[in-house]
Image 1 (cartoon, rainbow, N blue to C red):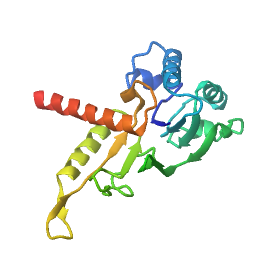
Image 2 (image 1 turned 120 degrees about the vertical axis):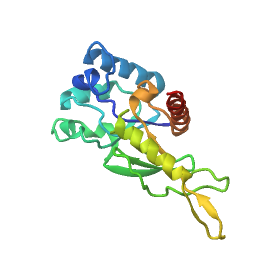
Image 3 (image 1 turned 30 degrees about the horizontal axis):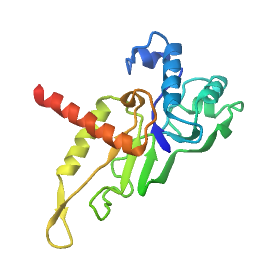
Length: 213
């Protein structure tokens, strides 16, 4: 099984208190909870693609962290990961690969992987014979911020847009961007299908809240 997750920010004490307001009493408590949740889901034979900003710790701290995380790990580099990646003492071999961007296939679908959201991603409008999306864009970086709200609004605009097709009619556009922010999944890596379902439920809840205001 392959799982995905973004923006764990292990060892990032200020983010726990301020930006994300994660609510842990300490960064040590946050780290232990995230490790527990990770290992409850992931087995050593599983793959986990980390979509950036895994750790704010130094090389030694991050080495010790990776020794405790189960699974075969792969890293899309985020803006905070160079803190440990550039160190000569960091054990890069813990990752199967380290890329700034990647495209993989997951159960017959393409996944575009980037720490930063890409609005116009490769294969965005492709669908299979059943009309289902053939490509998903998985990202992190924006957490649960105003930037994520703007991305959600953008996707709604895309879905409402229609363009001319080859038969003289019109067809709707599509956008399938998924923010794999760790707090959305209660700090567990999820499969592509799980992220699709969770994102759909989350956006429905957000829309219901907006409609009630």
